Image (cartoon, rainbow, N blue to C red):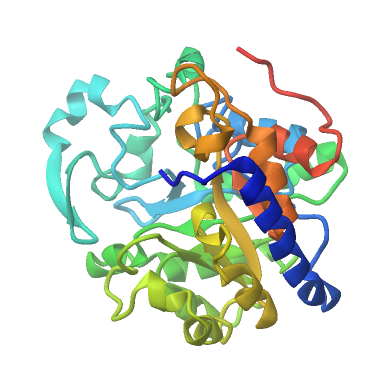
Length: 354
């Protein structure tokens, strides 16, 4: 967890950095940053559920983010990971006890239950649970209520929510572990392409993201005409690639990204002054969306934390103000209602403080 040296010094540095983005903004970068509901509004509802997405839309999120993984019968479903013991009640299903196993996912040994070992019909018997029950105990009241959604269902839901709220709401799908799924004969990209074409998703309605450049290049080659977002990690590099995230964040790396993507998505700590990443990306015509914004003390920069437990809320508005001042083009957040309010708008509704 990065600790900033002091709020006053950081805010002053942020103001200076913001002036460096003026020229980039003048060349087309929006002044009003997008608010992206990270898996919906998981600060208030279990992630990737219809209720989480509906709440994110109701409080003013511009985009909704579903994470895409595959079932054994090749259907795209929406889960944070292909390992589902933390996000579903699979442990409570004795009929699936024998499915527990250990796998090597992107170089890391993981034990649990995996979507690729289930058919869509079998996954349909499971229900979502809160992924962070110790941090977000308030959300556990919703455990066991919501089914796992398919990508198609999220598309249909998002369009219905856009009609209900009479405004554009876009999709922001992330392809999770595409190299791994390709290695086991369940490549994600062909089904994403088919789904996009079947639903006639256009560039104003969908932006596709991944941490793996090879996956994004495959999507670019498909000619969908959709914006692509290169996500950047903080350590190491994308699995299966002969590069590092540090190199990808250099001017040469950013120039390479700009050949196939319109956005970069770095961890928010990567943008703190004196980092030149934001201004370097803007100078190359790339937009920058920072992740992940949360309200709990555990996730805030040091000076924005308040006394109390890790699960208690700190000065989330102060942190949003810092990054909006720096000139980011989007924020990926678990609390889209707070991000909308911090942006200076009025959320159509606010989530209950439970």
